[in-house]
Amino acid sequence: MLGAVLTPATGPDATPLVAIVVEGYHGDRLADDERVARKLDAIHERLMEGPELIILAGSFCFFGMFFVAFLKLFPVIAIAEVKELVIHDRAHSHGGAH
Image (cartoon, rainbow, N blue to C red; front, side, top):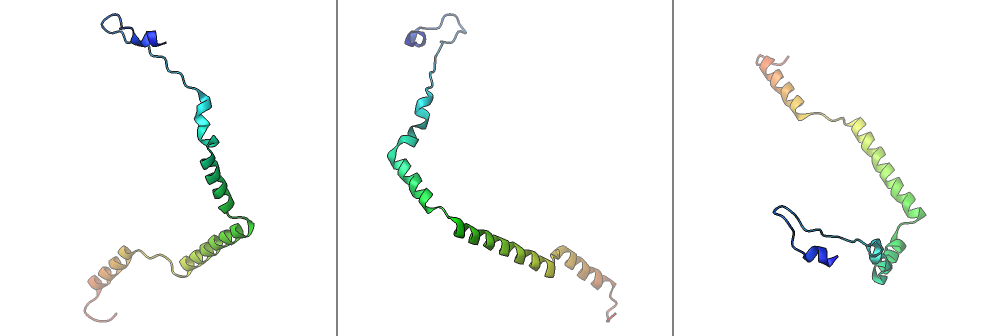
């Protein structure tokens, strides 16, 4: 293999042949590392369990419910529309009350 890399290329446009070998066994070497395994165990121990997940899901549900109720009671009004109405009322008023 090294002979193919070290030999000079023949011809003006020829490129040398380079072989690359990839071994799949070393791709998961971090999983075998004890420090990484301990960190993963610590993260797994700190994950939320049943009651905490229910409280978290309930919190999101209550927030969503109150947000939708807020939007229902106080709908979104575009400021551009309000300004347009004010300008329109000023242009059509004749100095007095309607």
